Image (tube, rainbow, N blue to C red):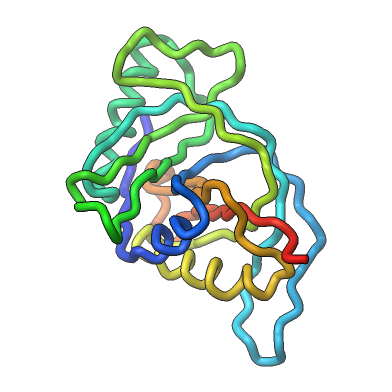
Length: 205
């Protein structure tokens, strides 16, 4: 079962993404790396990031209401429901979807979803606590954050505030998201955890 240790210490992710989308979310799927790389002024900050195309994703989801750093409870419930219904998550991707702006919504009213990817032949269990969501395909900028979840806010701020504006792309209407590649469930030290960040984009010209 997935062990979660999400710890959002900054609001950069949500304040940036809400400007271009009514939802802030996370998803995972096959990607096709582009070769477009931003040209930055000499001496400027530089992040390793790319533009990718994602296929539509199908996920099972459990809703969570409250502080985002407590979404681990929803992941635990999701794992329990999968086990009870004989759904094997081996090889699946676990992701979180964040639907509220913490800049304007009280912590106790924030809405998010704990999710796991499933194939087209998997039907949602007959349980009111779980649902199905399809994430649309599209063009996204992506980068990898390595380290504790506490540093995600800073990475999002640099990614959206510095890399994208110099990349030849601009943020488009859509959803931004995170893929939890390796975390506490792996037994690795926090310094080795990996989280992939995605932001919807389009060519700026």
